[in-house]
Image (cartoon, rainbow, N blue to C red; front, side):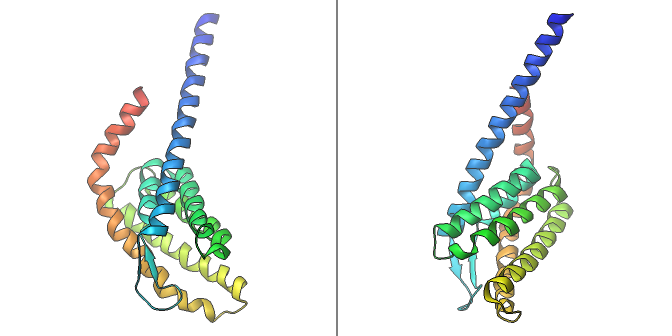
Length: 188
């Protein structure tokens, strides 16, 4: 009986270790994707502050939808903050870390690894609310003005909506394949 307990404990320990390694790898890959797609795939739509649209939110939404709130928070916050640090937007890195991390957490919390159109739309609305409120508060602190941050609201809104327009269909189309991937990953 003692041997069974040791064997079960060893298997449990190996499973936890494998799970942690998988989570670290996913965080690394999705953090890099968020960072790179934020930095290099962008369109200036409004010739003012906040008018830059990037697609860094696409891998963030994907990761949070399929791998949960923890991975969503980490890859979102770290990826977006890293992007800010590597570009002229370094002053925004702390704000991005907190706000986009919260977006990823809440998106993952709402979708709960069971992506449906309703859950994805609700998660997008929540992410948009967090982005608008978070960056507004952050910019109020940065610029010591309640009026200046208002200029960022249209661009931030377009950014989240654009990310959702791309991410939601991709998530829904890949839902079956991702379910198979997760089942295979659990059995290895």
